[in-house]
Image 1 (tube, rainbow, N blue to C red):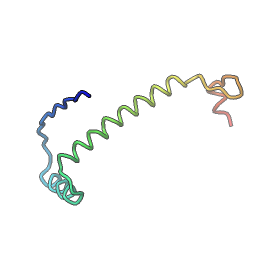
Image 2: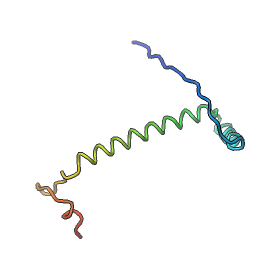
Image 3: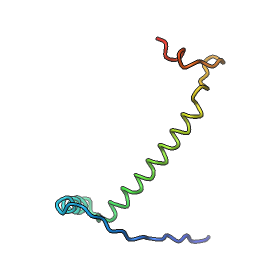
Amino acid sequence: MGTSIVWVINITLSADEKLIERARSLARERHTTLNQMFCDWLELLAAGRDQRQAYRGFMQNACGKVRVGGRPFAREEMNER
C-alpha cells in the first residue's frame, strides 16, 4: 500500500484578543487545541460547499423533469393548490 503525503501550511490570522481567549478556553474545555478546532471548522466549511454544489447540480438536473403518474408536470401545475 502506498502512503499519501499531507502538506501542512501555516497561516497567520488576526482576531480580537478577547475572542481568541474565549476560543482557547472553549478548546481547553473540549480537551483539544484552538488549531484543531480551526482545522475541524475548515473541514466543515469545505464539506458544506461540496454539499451546496451537489444540491445545486441536483436541482438544475431535476428542474422541469418532475414526473408523477408517467407524465411531466409544468411548474404552474405543480404549484396549483
